[in-house]
Picture: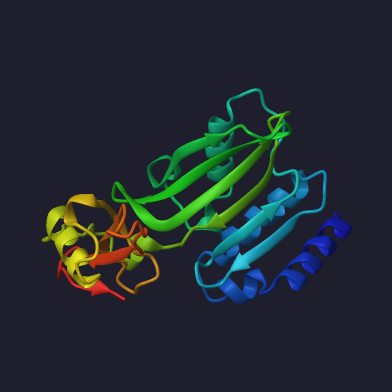
Length: 228
């Protein structure tokens, strides 16, 4: 056990900021440390942890993170997250994380990709990929999940005042009219890296007249302004 803890400490040191640096002063620090200790005690291989300071969560967990299981990879991934939810600032895993796809293109493991949800909407860019080996063991969890989003929203969803079509018109104008409104793909999501975590419309267009694919434009769900 002593050597396992020493290996974790070295991994954290080599991989960037420590858990104390990322969560110091937070009420999540104690529960997160206990979750790491539980993972370490179960892991048959050295546990690697990398932290994302901006998100306040691990960008990587790697090792033998669960016991073998005959359940589906989706079930295994969700149950794993329930065990480590303090690390990601989650409380209701099945409500806050949704399986968006399962990738079986590798012979040795299956990837389960989960998206962070906030009040029934996706969180822009927040996804976690969990790898489950052929024995049903979670060996890796990587991606970006922002913590405490409900708290930052003061536990209230945002009700948009702008329609999807209005957002598409705003985005088309912002891009100098090079992309027709009719080709817009509009997706509502919460923007996690802004202080108030606003609900925005992420607008992309299929092609311009010259065949160029458009950049993404974020339109604020209340003000209708483009967020740079």
